[in-house]
Amino acid sequence: MSEAIAAHRPVETSRQEIRSWAMYDWANSAFSTIVVTTLLGPYLSSLAENTGGVQFLGLRFEPDAFFPTMVSVSVVLQVIFLPILGAIADYSRLKKKLMLVFAFIGAIATLLLFFVSPNIPLVGVNGAVIMGGLLFVIANLSFGAAVVLYNAFLPDIAEPKDRDSVSSFGWALGYLGGGIALAIALGLFTLMEDKGLAVRIGLALAGAWWLIFTLLFPARHLRQRPPLKMLPPGENYFSQGVKQIIRTLSTIYRKYPETLKYLIAYLIYNDGIQTVIVVSTLFAASELGAKADVLMILILMIQFIAFFGALAFGWLAQRIGAKKSIIISLAIWAGIVIYAYALLYEIWQLFILGVFVALVMGGSQALSRSLFSQMIPKQNESEYFGFYEISERGTSWLGPALFAAAVQFTGSSRVAILSVILFFVVGLLLLIPVNVRKAMIDAGNDPAGVVL
Image (cartoon, rainbow, N blue to C red; front, side):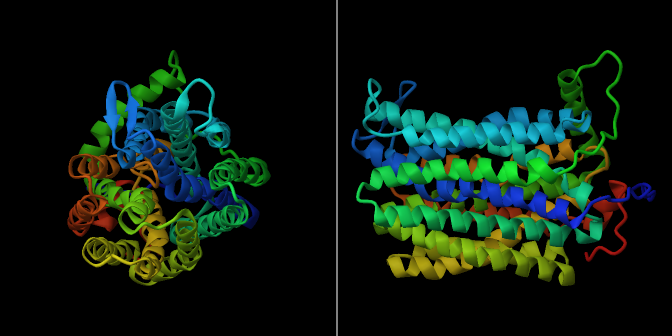
C-alpha cells in the first residue's frame, strides 16, 4: 500500500456554484419521479394489456415485463458508453458541455413521450408501446450520461470533509424538486377527465422541468475546470478514452483493491434500490389494484419525506461515517422487501411502507456517491464516475431484468419482488469488509478530517 498522499488540490468554488450544481438534481429528478417511478411503467403496461402483451423483435412480452426490459436495455448501452464518456471528459474541457448536451437530449426525448397514445396513426397500440419504450431508452441513456459528468463535478466543488453534506444537499433538493413536479402532475390528473391525456401531459412536464431548470442554473453558473491530463500526441478523445478504460480496468484491480470491492458492493445493492424504484408502482398496481391517483399521492409523500431523509443521513454520516450509515440503510431496505412480499395486501399499508422507503432512499444513494468520491484518484473523476453511473439511480439492469424474468415465468409480481432481497443481503456482506481508510490512501487522498 502506498502511504504517499497526493498534494491537496484546493477547491475553488462559491455557494452559488454549489447551489447551481445541486439544482441539477432538482432538474433531472422530475424524470426519475414522474417517468421512471410513477407514470410510464403503469401507462405502457395498461396500453399493452389491451393487446394481450407486446410484440417486439419477434418476441412477446407480458405487459408488466416490457418496461423493466427497456430499463435493462438502456443500461446495457450505458455499460458500453458511459465509462468511455467519462474518460473523454477527463482529457478535455468538454465536461460541462457534454453534461448539458445529454441533459437536453434526454429532456427532449421525455417531452416526446406526450405523443405516445393508443391513437397514433399507422402504428397501432403495439407500436405506441414500442415507441414509448424506445424514447425511454434514449432518455434514460442520456440521463445516465449527464449524471456521470454531474457527479464528476463533486470533487471540484467540495472539500473531502464536506462531500457527504454537499452530496446529501443535492439529493435532498432532487427529492424536493421531483416532489413539486409530481404534485403538479397529480393536480392535472385529478382535475382532468381524460386520464390518458393527463398522464401524457405529466410525462411531458418531466421533460420540460428537466430542460428549463438545467438552463436556469447549471448551464449559467457551473464553471468548467481545466483538464488535469493532457491528450497524448496523435490521439483523439475517443481512442484515448478506449485505451484509458483498458488501463483503468487493470489499474483499479492492481492498485485500488478496496475501491474495486466497494464498487462491486455498490453495483449489487444499488441494483436492489433501483429495482424497488422502477417496479414499485407496477407491483402496487398489479398486486393491490392501486390506481394512478393513489400511486401519485404515494410517490409524492415519499418525495417530501425523502428530502428530510437525505439530510438526516447526511447528519448521521458526519457522526458515524458514510459506510456505517449505508450499512444501516441496507438493513432497512432488506426489511422493506420482506414486508412487501409477506405482509403487504392493503392500500393503506403502502403508505406505511412508503415512509420507510423515503427515509432510506435518499440517504443511501447520496452517501454512496460521496463515499465513492473519496476513494478514486484525482484527475480521473469523470472516468471513475462513468463506472459508478453504470449502477446509478434509474439505470441498473440486473435487478429489473431478474424481476421481469420472474414475472414472465411466474405471472406474479409478488413472487418477483422477493428476489430483490438478494441484492441487499449480498451487497451488505460485500460492503462490510471494505477498508475505507486504505482505499483513500491508495487513491492518494488524505483521510484527515473525514469521519470513517
